[in-house]
Length: 164
Image (cartoon, rainbow, N blue to C red; front, side, top):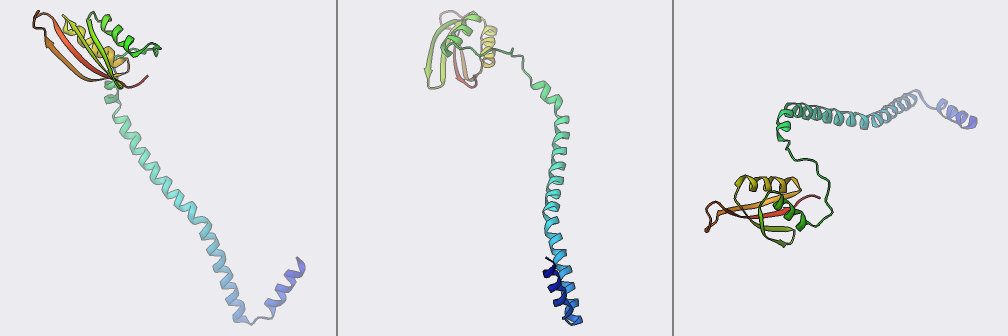
């Protein structure tokens, strides 16, 4: 190592003064370029993180403003354990629980078509609510007044399993 340093000093001492100035300016520019190249990625990362921070601050402020709206979106579905019984049994149990008479359940792919009769519209609406709380999406509901008895309603409900 000492031989290398000695040979470099010997080479530099043989140079003319303008060549020594040119060499020192070049070395200074080289060091400045190396420093710039090592600092530049960190500077870009800092700028990107600053932008992301300001966006997240804006999002957080928006969420704080929306907390009243979110609290109004909560539903009154009770927390239910996932039933291991068949979907057909779950739907028929829900119809019976609401004191409605089940006509039929037809399964078409992942969609179920229920037909039922009942005398109370509130029971039908409770059925729709409980089906929605049980993880089904109500796709359509059709209620008709029975031709034989004006106090009886016939309903057709199309539901699709969403989450289990």
